[in-house]
Length: 490
Image (cartoon, rainbow, N blue to C red; front, top):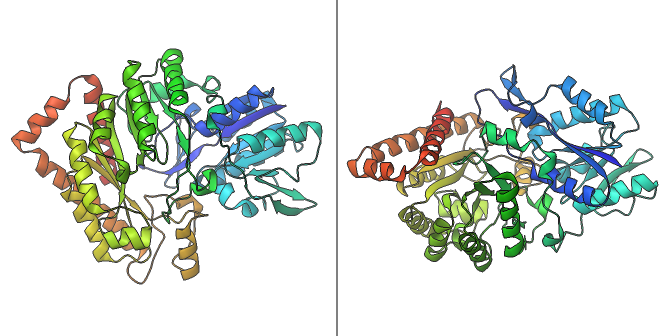
């Protein structure tokens, strides 16, 4: 069958931060479909229309316009259009793509997948132009669905599929996940305009070298953090690829695409320390000239000094650390993250001593928090010598425990998918209002920036930073970091 997989345009707040990264989700789906004889085309609307943003009513439409998308679908004339909707804020655009496909040909099958439809499949299937929802990990489900549609056979037993029968929505729960991830072919990057990503040079996780690629070496996380929606996609168990398979992909990227930087997009890259060591040592042994970072963060409690030294030696230049809160009671009882703040202090110090940039992720505004606990977070962030930080506002994504808490306690009065992002605020409790959260977020960024300025003006620190600028890659990285931080504060 002819199958077109589409990443819709993105609507972001004007003056907000955004980047563009090759969409591994649809690239993995494409590789599996191609391997099994289907004709596949990928359309990343964001990257292909990145240079022509449209501003309207405080938002930016980032990507191809609707007429261009219609033309691309019409020319390929697929049997199936698959629409990726990884974030709830993308759902209106994903629906618009579905509408366009059905306007072109009402017999075209429209399938939607990603974190949002996986979390609320019944809601998504209320829209008549969405025929199917693929729940969670999609490679096997979409392949089976494509085969059934091609043969006109029964779809009702397909695992992880949402559909309608005679107008009634039915959802087959996701019960099976891929155990042998090494059996998957590498993502179909040959179907993406890879050179455009390099030219734009704006990855969501920061960038040091422009020729970069994202990879996922494992799926899932056994953590129970109440804000995380990834369980709806990958499940609750951790499933790794072998170090050998990961290294083969990195070598492939270096050889075929001239890649010089890797972004490990795992939710828990270091869950198995020995496996992580084998990957990093393999990069060294194979003399791969790459830098690397972790946009989604790493598990701090899995780090030790030996592993950090190996990370540095293998090319790591920045570690993103999911710290979340500077109050241990909030961490353990509200967020449900098994992290000791004393461990955080120690690890941040060791990372910095080994010449790796430390970036902290923090969250404020969790139900159960007070203004005092949020002040604890701001104070903690400025005392542990991080190089940079993000202060996110608690965001109740569908399918998360946080969403259920907010819904059951009526903490949200106006649930707007368009503003469901970590820089927006919609939670109000008896302790704080959504407006107060925005002010606290601004205060956090300003205090952190002031702390950085005070720290860096000392002679020793200035010399230390200058010594770190050994080439143009380092200078570009530092410039990008400062530019993004100033944009956030502004």
